[in-house]
Length: 391
Ligand code: G3I
Image 1 (cartoon, protein in one colour):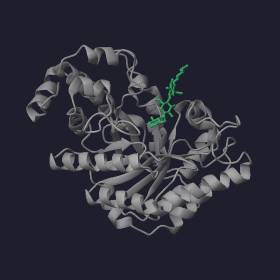
Image 2 (spheres, rainbow, N blue to C red; image 1 turned 60 degrees about the horizontal axis):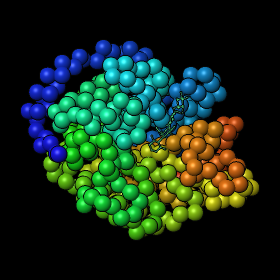
Image 3 (tube, rainbow, N blue to C red; image 1 turned 90 degrees about the vertical axis):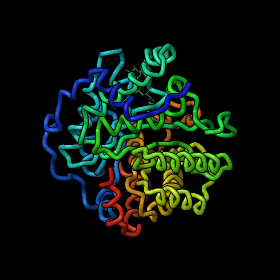
Image 4 (cartoon, rainbow, N blue to C red; image 1 turned 90 degrees about the horizontal axis):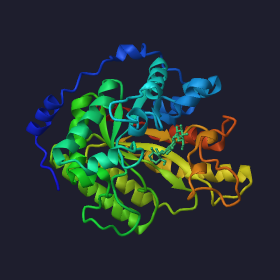
């Protein structure tokens, strides 16, 4: 079953669903404060080249740890909730919303003059238990209405405050041969709406927040494997089609969950970034962290190896004028998802050290590598300013 997207159905649908305008305005989230970052920190170095550096943050730590708030303000020019704007958190049951976690991230970022990213409107994970069965039993109109209500609910609330939204997240299938010619991942959204759900999500997000740059965020595009090249080709083919159809996509997010000992071909990665830029898209590294399970137990050696991986990818990425933001998936090692994931736990049982600061929130060579990479990068400030303001 697939839907033919047309403007009439979008407008009619929105009117029919009787969606209320968001009950809040930007002013309800406090004034926008002066940028708080330190000139000698990673954001200070990034900003001088037209870039922004930031991190995904857990609101519970943000709200209870003054030390965490201090390092976020010092090091970051951009924040996002790592879970706070996901459907499972915001809309746990039909009609019951919980914006408190996301609101706290938005308020902090505004108070500290930091950019905000939204993550993630349409994903196959972090779906509340009621959604997949609801989609499975819905016709295309009902499924479209559910998607519209969800996007209007969350993107409408933060309208005008989000620099870029991850409209769709991890929509490409597998990590090897794929079943569908279009390479799309088989998800409840695809089953209910057909492949047109991708374009639809962008049109709905554009209606919910016309000022946000809309992004497709994708994983596993960084290392040098044949199946990664195939993924890159499928992504570029879909992006070309989306641009040709007038889909309001303005950014592409490369998650960059890197694995320390996996191969990396700078020439191929540089070419991929260039092809994304040639499509007129801003590029964001959105979830950078380095799985260190292949590196030695010794902390000094491990931290150096992780920092080397960071430099290797950033020295390529920061050459690209279309690269706008570098975001790590957590700011300190105490906040990584990697220790909770069976594929990423170290065999020696030691905790991963994948992020710029250690578990005590002290700087590591990773943070030094960020600063050095930003300082060494060419200054593409003018091109980046133009792209950053393209919504
Ligand atoms: O908050 C509840 C807690 O109340 C409950 O007791 C507990 C029981 O399991 O679950 C807690 O929620 C967990 C949440 O993280 C907060 O810790 C969810 O179960 C867990 O699934 C969720 O995992 C997140 C995962 O995305 C799925 O949403 C990770 O923190 C988060 O780092 C991870 O991030 C993803 C990106 O969004 C997309 N790219 C990949 C990346 C890593 O998987």
